[in-house]
Image (cartoon, rainbow, N blue to C red; front, side):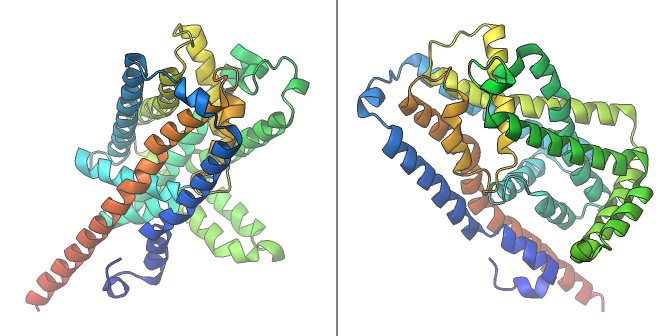
Length: 371
């Protein structure tokens, strides 16, 4: 991190930069490696690994997975362009999404990179109202994707989206509790943001202020007031947008999450060539992956590191019969969609910070020349 940082960033900014310092990749990498090492120790069978056929089918679908990953990042960048009303070009949007995803990768899954998103968008000279709107609306859109699509998938496939061969709720076991809790939390905070953004932000601010006056919540009072103010600002900004803006934002959000699950679907097909490629089978696999991801979203570890690797095989044991193959698939998927952002972040973030610092120095020099 640049040594002149303390002279150019506020204390609050330095705290955010500390949260995305490149050295933070060490923790999730160690957790991930620990989980993979455990799986290799418990499940890896050299004979099963030797039986994996590295055919044209395998490499074709691995290529499709990589291509889908690229499309996913571009779709995410497109949403940023839409929400910013074209304030960012394609290259800038791609860069900012990479930083945003890095922040999510080094933060607990339940926390994500929203705080960092506020910071990085503000550094790009985006108006405060637009920055607030983008971050809060993104949270709400992502939440609504799950609360709308999960009931549809459950209606179509029932308990099988939670556990292989599950018929009744008793067959699902503990996953029913985790799934229900995750869905309840997702629904609660999505409706919370919807009410605060589109219905009555002023009333929500008053409620937050009243609740956080309680003795055991008093330390959150200032943050609650700040969130209430953000809701008011975001609400005003969003009310000025037309139907096309909201439609496109919702449509691209649907594309983003669909592509995210199709990446993993492609990874599975690459190594399990016995899975039928008909729409019905693939749609049911998609349903299982979305449910799995909903539960993993609330992992306490950075980016779900360790948790996803350990639980991956259990969710998909009717599709991936070999534990060894399951470990190989999860490793390829995580390297592609998770560790790639850790590597990109290490490269992109120092350069981005230096550009911000250099721009500020130029502005100070220019201002000084007019004095």
